[in-house]
Image 1 (cartoon, rainbow, N blue to C red):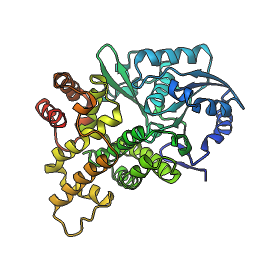
Image 2: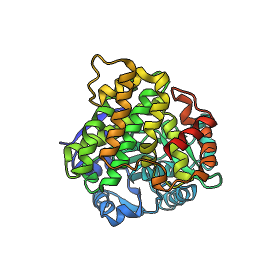
Image 3: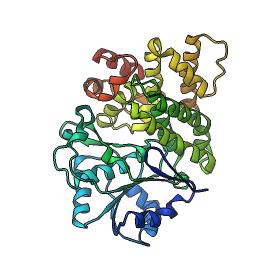
Image 4: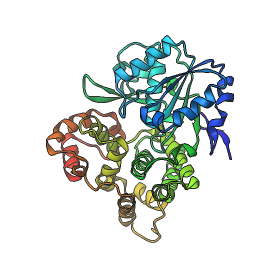
Length: 384
């Protein structure tokens, strides 16, 4: 069943949801569309499926050059094509990288300052003074939740770090969440992106920022991931598990309006310095961060344990916290997430540069336990 609901943007959800694209483009008076995606989705035929729908009512220009961690040059090329073809709407098709590239290209069309001007930690949304063309986000993974977020992550080649640009103008007009598009994901990508969704929900719930509505959403997203991720990995054609993971992904991104935590501050450098995919990086470091946070976040961890289905009745607060950490470890083992950073190619000599970037990353500001450079050094070594 295809259904539509709004929170925070319009979400068209359900198997077959992409068939609603012609009507959505008509509603937006879109006549020329830029489709931003990656070559893998072109080769898999998913871009053709989207174009078959968009071409019914509009002229579609394809930009298939999105990288796993989109760079400024990638975004600039997409923005130039947007201008050259006089497109009036941008579609981001793919995982977080494609959706982020689509958002950043839409911004770049009329905003030409360096991306550092728009970064979240300096209130960069105030510098987004021009209009941004409408964006439709179509996720093909269940992980980042970028379809319901107002942020985009762009890799700054000059500094070899990630910039988080954020503002209401980057929120997609519509998120088209069709779980059928995730059925072909291989198990390892399903596992890593699913752990990204779980990490978003967990870190958002533990964030020190006060937002009780997002707390409730996060606990619901944790529950969905705990109940469905293993099935989605091992029984990839299970549409119910795929649907629930897509919901968990969106809920995680909604929840992290209250910000994230130190796992993300560690994960971003793992991508830029060591080339570890973002979801996989989160998956490997998450339990270490939860253990680090336990002295000040035991009560929250206990609620996470309950959301993950642990029997915590009558147990002490410390035992409930330990149950959450063990539940995360158990899930990562069952879906074959590598146990260490060294198993995915990270080396000890990369740690100093990663620590420097982690300290500069804004996500740890709302981590329940403050993190210094020494703390990050110890955490990277523990995870290595």
